[in-house]
Amino acid sequence: MLKILLFCVVNNWLVGVCLILFARSSLLNSIKDLAIEEIKTGMGGTTGNKGSIAVRLTINSTGICFACSHFAAGQNEIAARNADFHSALKRLKFPMGRGLQDHDVVFWLGDFNYRISLSGDEVKRAINLNNFEYIAEYDQLLQQKNMGNVFTNFNEGQLNFPPTYKYDTFSDDYDTSDKCRTPAWTDRVLWMDKNNLVQLIHYGRSELKTSDHRPVYAIFQLNSLKFDFDKAEPIIRDIICSIGPPHSCVQCFISNNSLAVFPKQLCNEIFLKLCELGSVPKLSKLEGQYLFIIFKTGLDALAALSMDGIILSTGQELKVELKNEGGGIEWSEKIIENVIKALEKSKKEEKEYLISKKINNNNKLLDGEEILIDDEEVDDLAGEVENDFSLINLSDVPK
Image (tube, rainbow, N blue to C red; front, side, top):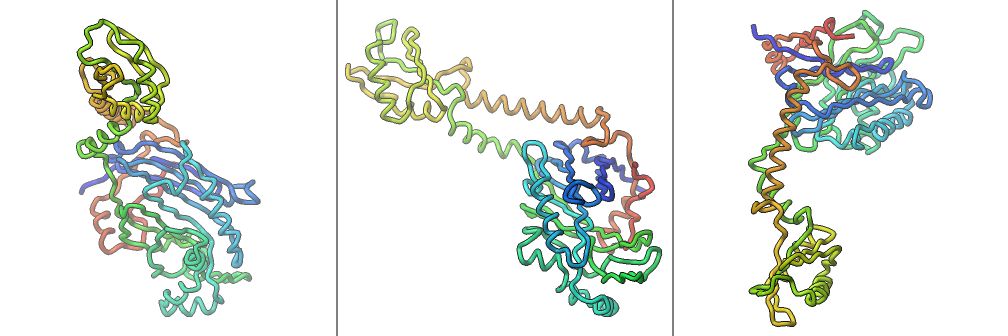
């Protein structure tokens, strides 16, 4: 029986919000740019009984974000829940200013606490008839999403399972307390996908009865974008050539000049013509038969090449070319060579980092924390999915 080794990449919690992320060992060399952020929204942002945790990472060249949230409770607190959503969207910021939506794929899950705007008896009658489509019309999250108030551009699977809240613990009965809360789909999994990389395989709930909520889970197939330098090289080359050399310098000389020096009296004439082109010289230097001119940008240097071959007032032909600093190597080729070296170095460093580095659970990988899952179970889940959590042994999850 084939076993798959999983490593705990993230294990972070904020009071009742917990986000644990596992990855197959075969993916570890592809994971980079790992970061975790959290915000508190309870009691006006002072406590963590309500709040959000988010982790972002890059797999190959695909930016992925996982967010877990607990929004405001209460049957009629729709505005407060919407506010919690927007607070998380605005305040969860990763290094380099990345927000949740600055990723190719975002998975957002948690107890969003949106309720169903029907009476408890009406909801229960519909549940008994498996008429989930009817009660979904009154689901507050779907209503707010359709109005454009929350989760714009996010997707969700069909709600074809009974509401997951509120149950009597260790029971199949919905809330029988004095409050007798109306059943609701408070627990949800949504995703945003900018490049059609995500395919939902299954969306459902598990029949664990240790809480007043039934756990919700979703199984996805996720394809990642991978940088192909061979395909990208022509584009990179075009971009590099279009912005000009980093030194922004040209060298001018007079064709068939019998003198050992560049005619100094021609400098002003050349500078004026350059200004007419819009390429204003910043610095200049006479050296032997050459006049070296430095511009503000490489684009200005490229524009100056249009003066190559013009006839000056003395009847002499001016030659203009980019300054060669590569010992005969074209400047763009030198940059391409440096890009290749940088990519190779980055790949080597990432591999060494992920293999040898021991990291704590604060934004880092947990070395040695691992669990095993059965590969046949994964295949079964991709077909007819069982409503349980046999995929992962939760007792092995590191605390």
